[in-house]
Length: 150
Image (cartoon, rainbow, N blue to C red; front, side):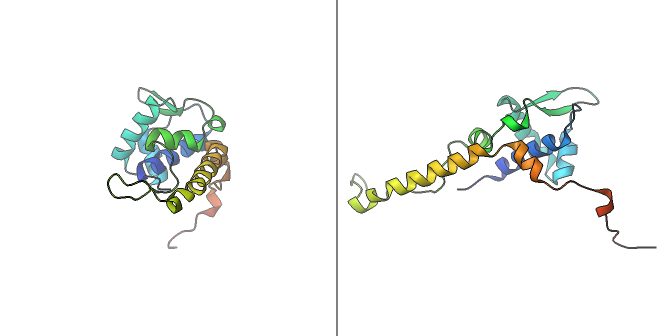
């Protein structure tokens, strides 16, 4: 299964918002800096996530983005489907020429591909943005190691 860079950036931005655990919006620049993402590319992604009802935006000097609903209710599956479309874990097709019917051997693989697809969907449904955010180690000031000393 291929996840586009656009979707990965969107997932990372949502996790960043979930980690913030605050009612204060984060600007696109703050999210981009935190995740080392290109801010211009992130703008379009955040607009799309807003249209999908995953984030809301606030205007003004202290404006930015917030999660539109609890991170524990946003699954990876719905984000991937919203940003990338239908989930297909493998690029599998019955390769035939023209109007030829797939062979019995080709048809024999269909249950396998279906089972893999269903397992992938179940796994993506089980993971939430909150679960991912909870698994990210917290940043600590004492973890800072200076590059040089004077």
